[in-house]
Length: 133
Image (cartoon, rainbow, N blue to C red; front, side):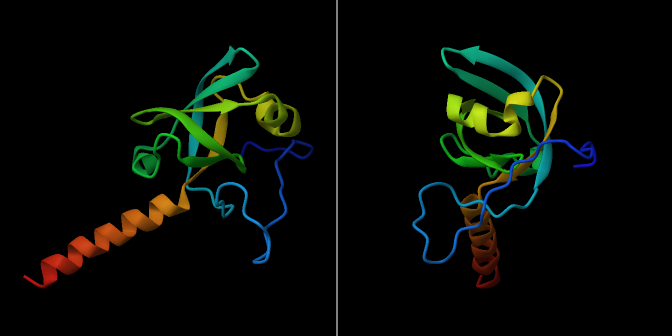
């Protein structure tokens, strides 16, 4: 992200090996688009973060699906058009740079890889169906 400076905190996680047990979301480490934090609200012991994403990538987000924000894989708690909401539990807040997000913060977004594959499959299927007519 062009806003980063030397010394800024980033989120790094070791990659899985093919023999590693999968216990979360599939994240590749790509950036699909940049989102803007629209709001941060404390609710009980969690924080709800509303993020506006690019219209182009909205189709790859689903309620309770996965999304990576600045490299941290999270679950979409709410969705309304191009606004997605993620919930940060205390562990995530303490162990990631997401605790520094504020309204107006720019964040790197990686949408769900399974959603992208399904979208591409059905888009191609439609094309193939039209060719056979």
